[in-house]
Image (cartoon, rainbow, N blue to C red; front, side):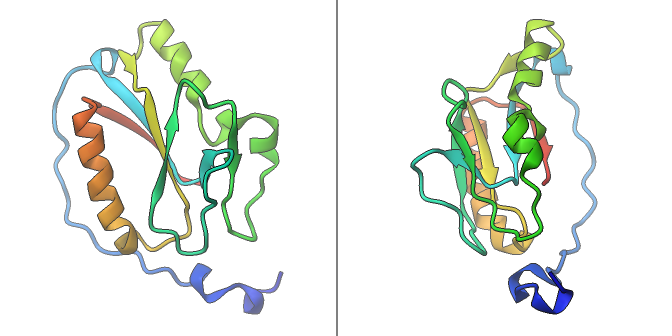
Length: 147
């Protein structure tokens, strides 16, 4: 695909400037409840697919992640790794191993996926909602998986 054929929605996505935020303290990772947040456009089979410029997210239940499908809409996105092992974009099995080894405190039941290639500013309302869900679930650590 030539750059002139790339849909406008995927080109020149502005990246906002953010104020510097000091890191905060807290318990060691071995005491934290951790959730995954991916931008791979993951969802459970049967859920509505992400579309271009989707500004929402899907909740992924860790008790049923075997029926995950990817609906990432980028024409340049290589799905080969996901087709072989979904841990490439959603490393739930690696996180379970860390919990079993007592290197991570606890696995959150719920994890989240956005569709990447969307302006961060447009995702701000969904991110604010998600942060409330994480706090309500007592999640105090996340692993961000940018795709």
